Figure (spheres, one colour):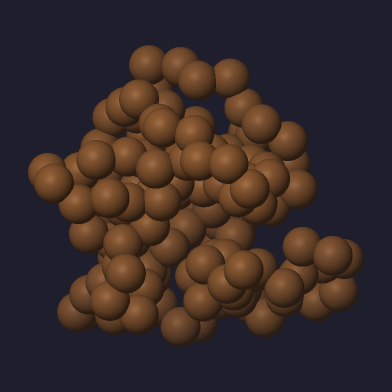
Length: 139
């Protein structure tokens, strides 16, 4: 299997979410975020990542789950979308894992959050919600 079938599994509000690994640049510890006025509510600000300014969004706020407390397990997942870097704050990162297309179930009426969910991946007894990065990164 290639990277097309690999995901980064993350935790947010006691639920597992995933992003395709080929859109993840790196995973870093939470660092100081500089607030910027007049940004969307879910945008917490910007970070300086080795000389590059990277906007950071709270995944909890973006998904309508509320803001999570920062812990020592909290991470920023740096993704690249349309040649732009974006930091996503999450409660934890569990693993990088592989999946097969047969494990993905199309989302059925998931309410308002359906727009961010591409599918549900069944891994053993766990259900992992596969996020749509295009829609998460859109304003």
